[in-house]
Structure formats: C-alpha cells, structure tokens
Length: 490
Image (cartoon, rainbow, N blue to C red):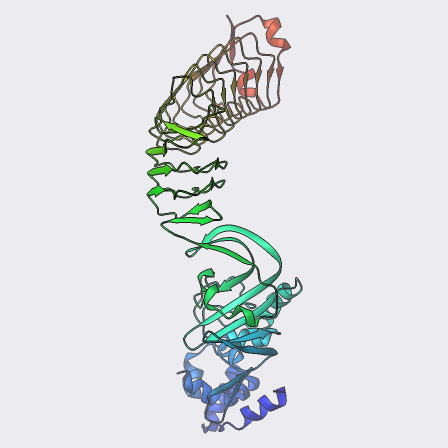
C-alpha cells in the first residue's frame, strides 16, 4: 500500500467539529502540522481512549507529549470505522503455523508498527528495555535499524492470537554459555524476545521457525532435576539447586558447571564421571559434602575433598574439607577452594609439594593456614584476597612465592620468609596493609614489582643477612613501603 493510499484513508475521517477559537488556540500551541495530523488520527485516538477534545489538550497537554502520541500513529493505516487493517512499512508475510503468522521486517516503519503496544520494538530500542508502550520516534528508530542491518541482522515477528514474539537473526553464530529462563544456551545465531522485552528461548520450540528461509542455529538444553546435561556432559546447574545427584552415565562435568550455584550443599558424583573441568565448583561457598561413589576409577573422595587418584591432586574442596594426611594428596590444584568463603582454617599436610594457582583465591573466611614441610612452591594468587587470614607459616621447604600469592591478605600483621625462598613474585604481598613487620631470609635474590606495594603499616623489616647482601637483592619498582621501613640485620 502506497503513501498516497494511506493519506486517502486518513482524509476520509470526519473533520473535527470544534469552535474556531479553540482550533486557533490549538494551532497556536501545537502548530498547524500537529492539528492536521490530529484531524487525521481523530477516530483512532478515540479508540485508544485518548481525548480528542481540543480545549482539553490546549489546557492539559504538553506539545512534546501530544507529538509523541501522534507521531506513533501517523504511519498506521485504518478503515473508515477506525479499526486497524494493515501496518505501514515494508514487510513480507511468510506464512502461518503453530498459531502464529510470520512476517519478515524490511524497514524501520514496519518494525516500529509491528512492535507497537508491547514493551519492545526490536529496531527502535535506545535504552528503554521493558518500558511499557514504548514509542520511539522514527528518527531514533532509524538510527538503530541502520546499526543492526548494516551488520546483516534480520528481523522477524511472530504474531499470534494472544502474543507476539520477535526474532533477530544474526549472520554469525554466537556462543552464549548462559542460562536464559529455563534454557541453557550453548550457541545460537538468534535472539528471541517475548512481549516483556525479555530474552526467552523457551519459546523457540513453539514457533514455526521452518517458515523462515534462513539457517537458524539454536543449541539449547532444558533443565532436568536442576541440571543441564547434553551428550552426557553436565554443562550447568540451576542456580537455586541445593542437593545434586549427578545421573549415572554422565561422563563429564564441564568447566565452571556449578559456578553461580551458591545454594549448593551436597554433591554426589557417580562412577561414570571421567573428567571434571577447571573451576567446576568455583564460588560454591556453601558446599558441605563432596562424595565420589566408590566405583569411580578416575577420582575418589576423602574428608569432603575430591582427589584425582592417579596424580594425587586435590581438585575440589569445600568449607568442611580436611586435606587427607595419608599421602593420597601431593598437590592442591588450581582454584581447588576458589571463593569458598565458608572455609575458616586449613592444614596442608607434609605430603603436599605444591599449591596451585588460585587454590584458595577469595576464601574470605579463612583465618589460619598451616603449610606442610614439603611444599616447595606457593602458586600465583594462591591466597589472593583471603582478607581474614591472620596467621600463616611458610616452611623452610618453599623456594618461591608466586605473583600475588598473598595479595589483599589484609589481616596479616607479620610474615616470616625463610632462607630457602629465592624469589618473591610481583604483587606477592600487595595491599597487605595490616603488615607491621616482615622477616626476610638471606636466600632471597629478587623481590618483584610492588611485592610489598601499599603495605602502609609496614614499620620494620628484619633481614637475615648483612647490608651488603641486602644491596644485592633485585627489588622491583614501587616497593617504597619496604625500602623506607626501618631495617634490622639479624
């Protein structure tokens, strides 16, 4: 339908029968163009419950508000009795199925009109997500339409008897790896919006997607018993889940599978699990029980720790964990206790030789640590941001302290670094502003950049060597708290 046809429909509306003085006042306030549009839109304004009394608008309406109402109406076609028959703009009707009529949207006018009356308009949104009856101006909508379509994005509307659904189709696949509604989205090249302007991929199966003659990628997983499992891989959990029994037959727990499941308390891992991904239980601060069934050949559990049997690496711990001292653990893996804020103390037995990257990262409730006499390496960020840590003894077996190993341990007041340590990494004790004294062994040859940066309370440094030995240490920049503190040679 052409623009001329629309104008002819508007012109068939009855002309307002108002007093000339009221019309003149209206034109003086809103302008002649607005008056002409007001006349053309008269019947539909009444149908929408909007007053068409000119005197009322002269007294009560701001020009901006009335213009917004009229501009949103001007591109719609209406019959003589005011009922909507067609929408303006360039669009294609693709067919009907599953209770929906499907339209491909080819210009901004059609996009605005198909989205009208809901909380969204897929091409016209400009920071008004979820705003009821959002009515962007055409100029504002065109800006966003051009931004999307210049990147090859296509738009479709599904119009049902009781609902509308909008779909944006992107030219490339996008891995999302997140839960939207009750669906875990692995990868897709589309976005699906409901009438509340919310992404809702649960609608996907109810839409006649086959009417769209484009390749649509959608790999989503519905939750069963609080778990998202695909091809025998547990990829995610429902955030509110508290007790997990992983189904037998599941072979893998994906990386970060339980991240965000902050209510999780108990986990039972079956014999069939052969792989547990990195940070699988990261941030699960409330876990009290971690159990691996006895037939599992890859892992076993002891004292609420999960241990990789062959390598003897502790890969997951929790707030009730006690690291076994029977020799079954020789290393603590990366992020094994990551963000386990419920952990208050830990004893690392003599069998352990290394503490991995971020092993106790963010354990904000941890107050004391005992490190066994066989540990040679404290990994980077091993105790990062353990803000309550007040006591830690570094044994003579340790030869290096990784970067940011104790960064942000604000509860430490003193630390002794034994003669066995040769290097202290960058930011190793950065922001330990509770430190008042440090004892450094004579084996240290390098102290990294800002290793003691922002240690504002540091008043005394005890060095187990001579001044000549101290002067040979390579001290990185921004360690003024260390170099300006009172130094004693002992």
